[in-house]
Image (cartoon, rainbow, N blue to C red; front, side, top):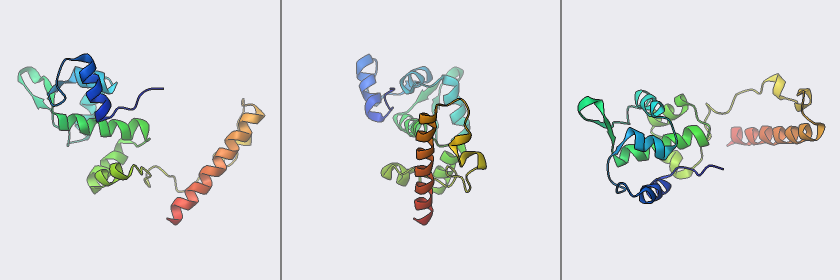
Length: 155
């Protein structure tokens, strides 16, 4: 299983590669490598999150500050590990709830929980090509998720 990318693991990688200090500016290729995302994804995130402001030198070469990298780590975590959409993360920024969400690590948002469960998801018995034992396991998980959704609605 892949290691979660955090500021701590980023610093470990920096020390392991021995190329720059933790507080040094990094190029897009270094950041992309350390976050395990393609460079074009970082450029895309810059268009969607105005909070990411790498310094640009002649020729348009980007240099990411440590605070930019910390922000990218948070965005990556929300998108890839916690299942947020771009719009969901933007909403967290807009509402000022990102710091609160990150401190509590409680990443449940209305955007993530559907108001109604689609009819096809109400029963795992209709799933074709899955063994009966696995289907029963999925049905149990679905029941747990439905009960958790009800609890979240009451909270």
